[in-house]
Length: 125
Image 1 (cartoon, rainbow, N blue to C red):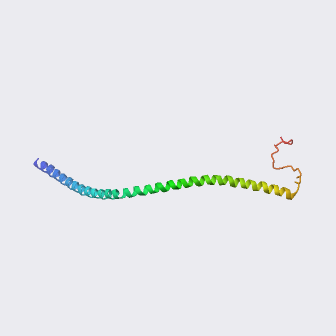
Image 2: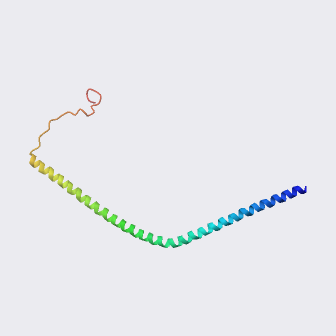
């Protein structure tokens, strides 16, 4: 029975030793992680004001571009209406000139249109 207690005690000591080694390794890992996070935090604290300034500049540029696009779209709408009116005037003037130069219209002979659907019956219904 003494051997059993000796074996159990030795086993407990080995588990405790292994657990101590694992905790020491975890301590080293957490120390390195803490150092990395502190370095990253410092870098972020330096970078954030610069990014804020850049974002302010980007917002100003975006506002200017939006204003320019709004002005350009309004001008384009006006010029499109003007161009459409001018194109219509050119068409009407060309048609009028052509009718004067070509003389009276020649009547066309009436033709049947074979492509129209006549139904399926001989009377066309």
